[in-house]
Every structure is written in structure tokens, then in C-alpha cells.
Length: 291
Image (tube, rainbow, N blue to C red; front, side, top):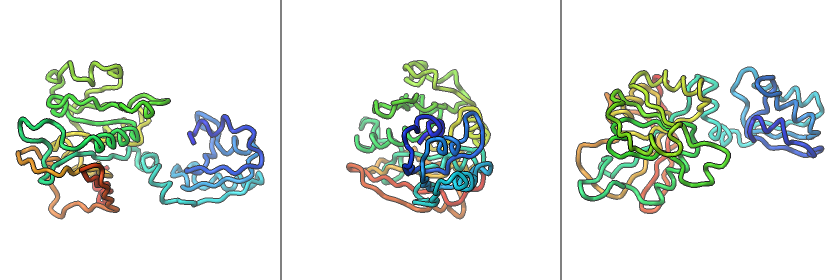
């Protein structure tokens, strides 16, 4: 449950067991500690999965709650809980958000279809899955060339994904902001105030700023091959979500450019899932050299 909501709205729970993904916080910050709210609520048992990665909190809840007579059970589905909060964990440990590179490509690793065939590589089911990916992130990063070519909306079109929140922050990386189309949806829709244009620079510094200034834990990178390659070269991509379409396209537009890696990059925990006619590959980037 939400960190603030943990302290408020727990009434009438005396004698109950509460299950939470993350260890309840145990120190004062902008809000009182969650352990304090749990004790006041009269809860008799707390079950949580992942230990708080913040060293100010880590392991502190057990002693505080135990001293108050509350039974604590920790480490339940710890790996699964850790995956759910991986963005929060990375920010706590490094000051930078978790980055997911999302791409859609043909089987010959091309980003675009031949002229006259239309713009979509993947089917409707895959595009609906992209909405879920966006909804799980606080920011989406794209490149100026993508905005000029495709005029993407980078929004949330499923109403349920917008309940209680704004769309993710939309960040356009471009050294030629004057050439960006003013009529692109990013700049003229109802959420235009959630769009920023920033110059090319150190991706690590950008990520630190997003975490520090905007509270971003997870970033979705939706862009062309040049920007994706630069972020991969910098070691700033943690996970991939690649949609493979059953078609061959040819042409020069590749999804991942950059300098390349002589030894390759290892992908861990690969998971394939068929979505309509397409296949989605989710995996973590096992080797990180920068971010």
C-alpha cells in the first residue's frame, strides 16, 4: 500500500494481519513512520516481503513492532516483491531510476516498415501491452528524431491507468529543439505541461535529476536506435521489453546503434510471451558498467 496511506486509514484493524510488499518504514520523514501507524491501529501481525533498501529503515521495523507485541513475518515472496519495487530499490542504492528500454522490431531487427506499408510493426494487443508498460513508469524518455518522424503521444489511453495520477513525465532529448514539430501531441495535448525538452548529455546525470527532482523510480526509454545505443553504451539500461513482429522489413533503421560491445551484453532471466501475432521478450541487462 502507498507509503502515506499506511499511516492514515488503518482504523478498525485491531487484531488483524496486514500484508505489505515492503518493510514498514521506521523513521520520521515528511510523514510519521509506518510502524507508528501500525502500532496505533491495533494490528497483531505484520507480514512483509522485501527488506527496505534504505539503510535508515532496513530491519528496523522488526524490533519496533516486536517490542509493541506485534508478530512480524519477513521474507514472504521476497524475490517477487523485490521485482515489484526494483525501481525504488535502485534509487535508494544508486540515486538513479530503473530504466526499461522498450522497442518493437521486425525479425530482421528493423524499426520501420517499407514505404507505403503503414507505421505499425506490431498488432493491437502488443500496443495495449505498451500502455501497461507506460503505466508502470513515472517518466518516458524519447528522442527528437522520433518526435519529428512519428509524433508519438506517449500517453495513457486506458482510463483506469490514470486513476489518481497524471500521465508519466515525457522527456524529449534533442539538440535541435527549434526543429521539433509544434503540432506534435506531446506539445499540444491536455498534458503538455508534462513534456520537457532537454539537450543530449550524460544520461546518468539526467536520471539522477529525475529521481531527485521528480521522484521518478522507473523510466521507460521509447526511442530510436541512436539514443537507445547511447544509453546502452553508458550502461544505463537495466531491462529490455522488446516486441518481435512476424515480418521482415529491410532498410537502414535499426533499434540499437551506438558503439557496440565486443563481448556482447548478457541478458538475464529472459521471458518470452506471445501477444497476438507478436512475441514480447522481457529480460534484465546483466552487465552494467555505468548507471
